[in-house]
Image (cartoon, rainbow, N blue to C red):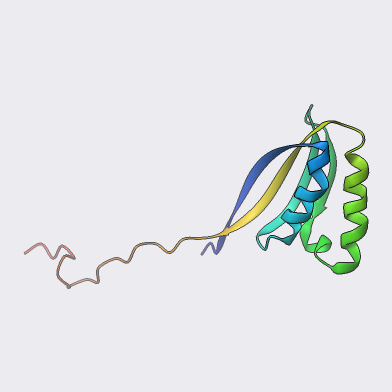
Length: 103
């Protein structure tokens, strides 16, 4: 049984928005990984958010992200998120009205 689904979201940001966007993504509960790419699609850094969420790791990661922002003007942030599976609609029980008893 599948309990969750992985989805990917791309966000294009300017250099001055990069550190603040990464900070807000880290605070989201459903983000698993953040990948920062330049405008040509080259990956600069991949951040596993489960590691980044630990307080001691948070500050150095943001400092590295801020340093990246000085190199390139535009970035794409690829966000790997988990989404809880939606509950399937309830099926009528066999023998109940609407179950298609075929009488």
